[in-house]
Image (cartoon, rainbow, N blue to C red; front, top):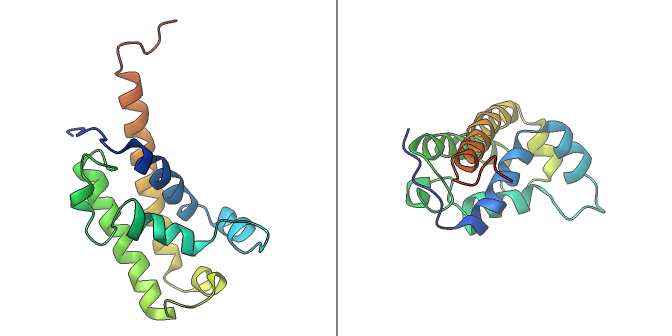
Length: 135
């Protein structure tokens, strides 16, 4: 695995929490369905498809907000899983309809695997820094 680094750390600071949110059904129900919260599925979709990555074509973000080819591949899988649900329920459906869709577990699973890899890669990159472990 080659870590291409991240030239857009600000982007990654948005992408990783968005992926983690997609990996957590509990978070989705407690936060996205609470009208008093600012985060919802629409926000997550904008982060991952429009603003800080493009889950339909993530390869152009390699070295930007994605570290490795594996992250690119997993982000593409997440994009496919999400798009299948969106196609099934309609883009303008309320969040609860997405969460109850038969294909939603595939979105959660794809996001969970991607979150695991992204966090492991970030920890590895941090541990590899010369000052890691020194006070």
